[in-house]
Length: 146
Image 1 (cartoon, rainbow, N blue to C red):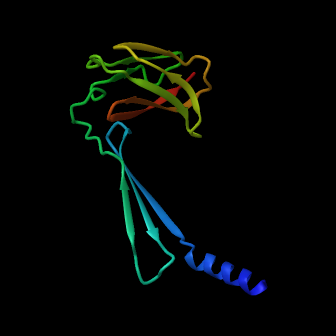
Image 2 (cartoon, helix red, strand yellow; image 1 turned 135 degrees about the horizontal axis):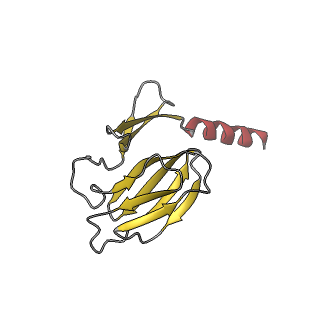
């Protein structure tokens, strides 16, 4: 019985794969992330450097899109942030506000062309506003200041 168990353990560890990853991000002049590339390297076999590259859709800041003309103001803010989406059409746009720890602090659904988010009860600091629509996601850095 011990020989079978030892054989199973050796087989299990011989098939175990260890991977390392590197994340590269690109930002535009306003500080908005426009691309993310994750490189996953299989390091279980030193002879073979298999490199997988998983890419998010890259959004060119000059590219036309529903969210490309979105304007947020004032930023920094102390009480509210205005979101103007001029090319909304009949698209459904949702969003969320995250703290720098990645926790969602506010969720917004079915945004209109003119929106106002109340942040006066938020702690001062930096937040990330992310808006989503079919095939497009954009993020903005929001600073709540007192």
